[in-house]
Image (cartoon, rainbow, N blue to C red; front, side, top):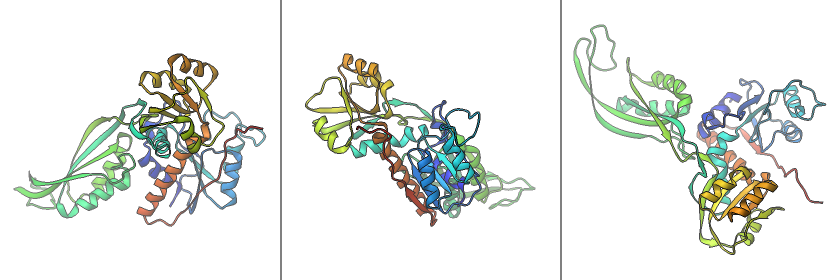
Amino acid sequence: MIVNDFLNIIGKLAPPDLAADWDNCGLQVGDPDRVVTHVAMALDAASHTVQKALDIGCQLLITHHPMIFRPIKRLSPQDPTCAPVFLAASKNLAVISAHTNWDAVGVAQALASKLELVALSPLEDVGAPFSKLVVFVPPEHAKKVRLAAFEAGAGQIGDYPECFFQSSGLGGFSVPPWGKPFSGTPGKSHQTPEERLEIILPTALRGKIDRAVRAAHPYEEPALEYYELTTFGHGFGLLGRWDPPRDPVSFLSSKLPSNGLWAGPIPSLVSSVALMPGSGGDYVTMAAKSGAQLLITGDVNHHQALTATEAGLTVFSAGHFETERPGLERLAQLIMAALARLSEQIELTVLEEASPFRRL
């Protein structure tokens, strides 16, 4: 496999067009055609994680946080803002980041699983552009066409890959005199059994998937139709419930061992919970308006804590690292599952990390 194959795998799990406009996801450093036999994963592409990846012989590092947020004016190992970039580039280590595109589909969901929450909906739903492909194909070629679409990036719904709907029917057409049909006779009308395949896909990948399906289809003129969709259920954060209600202080101290901070009232029992892994202070008002009793996030500032107190919302600031690390671990599991489906023998190592904050 090459670096670009991993971009395709991540693109299926977390389509690039789900990323925020200000973000910088995808390939940060490196050659997309470099052969990969060992991959490392980490929340951050800091110098120490880059060095760890190099020490164990990796050709690729996949991170959550982007290595490059803003344009770099100079590239020097003495500049702490770009020292990791210099190290990776100088040692030919490719770096891919899946940030807000993965936030939109996986990070809050992973934290919800860890916290035993029943997920209900995103805290901030950002209707995402998807398309549905409908294609008609002879029954004996349906599997080949499906697999070609999946390989190109179609068929992913949440954590579930290779999703499709298939039904049988009768197709009909007239063959032109100069035609070279898969079935039928030039100059005559023809009817034949066909399968109708319906597969969802990220709109950004439509051109690539269209080419793959046409290449796998036996017809001279395959019938492909695309329907534009706006799918909901993708977005930032999550609203969920504890059923039965939990004592938030005792429960969270066992699930998120950290030096977390509390703001607002401290209820004895909570059922309605908002999650915003990472920097969630800007979502205090949205969480309060949603009816949540508790917002669990990575970090908030002084004024956001005051706003929560005024709104009667309990906030637990558990740490940026602590709330996002479960999302990285879930992404690693999904990438390993994708490699297994492809029968690829690639070694994947999730690097040990710790929060950069500590109490003395």
